Image (cartoon, chains in turn blue, purple):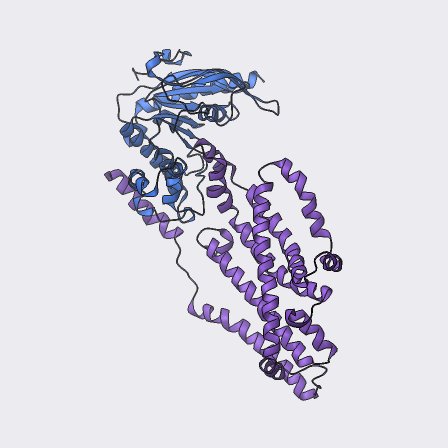
Length: 279
Length: 288
C-alpha cells in the first residue's frame, strides 16, 4: 500500500529518460486514417529497456494502432518512432528485434506447430537444421515440446496462443508486442498464460508492450501502465507499478494488488469520462 | 523445461488434447455400408436394365442388354482402345495446360489490380463464348484437328481454375499477411509460404471442376470439329456407331466415357484429399 501512493497518479513524466535506457520512443505521433478517424494525436511515449508496459484504455483509444505503428505496420501520419540504439534495416525497422503476438493466434492451419514457429527464421534464411534446437527450446519454454508435430486444429485456444508466443520469441527479439493476446480466452487459461508470460519476461529480460482493456491483467503483469484516452487517442496517465511481492497466485489475492487495481481503475474511469466529454 | 511448464503441458494434454485429437469414430458396420450401399444400388439398376431387355424382348438395335455391352466392350476393344487413348490424351493434356495456365495467370493477376483490370475481360469473354460456336472457326485457323480439340478443352477448363485461384490467392488471412510483413518477407516468400498454401482448398475445387469439364469439352469439341482415321476419339466412335445403328458399340463407348469420368473424379478427389486432409475443414469430419 505504501509503495503505491496517489502521487503516482499524476501524469508523471517517464521515470528515466536517459538515452541509454530507452529502447523505443514515439515522438508526437499522430495517426489519421483515410476514413477521417484521428486514432492518435500527438502521442509521446518512451519505452525503457526491460520494462513490462501495459497500454490500457477503452476501445477506440488507439492503443492497438500505437502498437502497430511501433511494429512498423503502418506509418504515423506525423511524428516519428525512434530506436535510439538499435541497428535499423533498409526499411527503417530494427532488424529482427520485434516479436508480435496478435489478438488471434494467427497460425498457418496447413503447417505443423514446428513449421509455424520456424516461419520467422525461415523467412530470414535460417536452415531447418540450424533452427531446430532453437524451435524446440522455445516450444519447451511455453510447455509445448511434445506438440511440435501437431496441427493447429488439434490444439485448444490456449495452446494455439502459446504457439503464437513461441513464434514471436523464436527470433530472440528485444521487444515483444502483444495486442490483447488473451482477450478471447477463458479466465483460467488466461491466468495461466499470464503467469507464463511473466516467467518468460523475467527469464529473458525482454521488453514487453502489452495492449489490454483489462485492469486486472495489466495490474498483475506490468511494472508500468500507460492509461490512454479516446477521441483523440492520447496518453492520459502513466503509472509505475511497484511491488515488493512476487507476482504469483498469492499476489492476486493480496491487499497490495487490490490497491493497485483500485488506482488503475480510477485512472481508467477518468480517461473514459474525459474521452466521452471530448467527443 | 521448468516444473511449471511441465505441469502446464500435462494438464493441457490431459484435458484439451483428448478432446481435440479425435480418432476415427466410424464403426466397422458403417464403413462396410458406405461401400456396400452404392455398389448394391448400381448393381440393382444394371439388373433391372437386363431384366427389362430380357422380359420385353427389346431388340439390340433399340437398346442393348448390359451383358451385350460388356461383350462388345471386349470384342470391339481393338477399335475402342485407341479412341479411348486419344480422348484421354486430349483431356489430360488440356487439364494440365489449364492448371499451369490458370494458376500461372492467377499469380500474375493478383500482383496488381491494374494487371487484373487489363486482363480479366479477355478471360471472361473466353468463358462466356460457347466453345461449340467457335470450334468451327478454330478448325480454319488451326489446321490440326487434335490441336483444335485440345484448344477447346483447354478454354473450357481454364476459366474455372483461373477464377478459383484468383479468389484463393486473394482470401489470405490479413493477420498472417501482417505477420509476413513484420518478418520482412519478400513478395516471393509471401507467395510460396503463404498465398499458395492458403489457396490450396480453392485449387482442389478448381482441379475437380476442371477435370470433369475438360473431359466433357474434349467430347463436345470432337462432335463439333469431327475427326477421322487414326486420330479419332471416343466421341467419333459414338457418332459413327450411331450412324451404323451399332448400338452395342455406342453403349460400350459410352461406358468407357463414364468410367473415364469417374476415374478422373476419383483421382482429383484423391489429390484434393491428400492436399487438405491434415488441416482443412472441408476434408475433416465434424467432431461431435
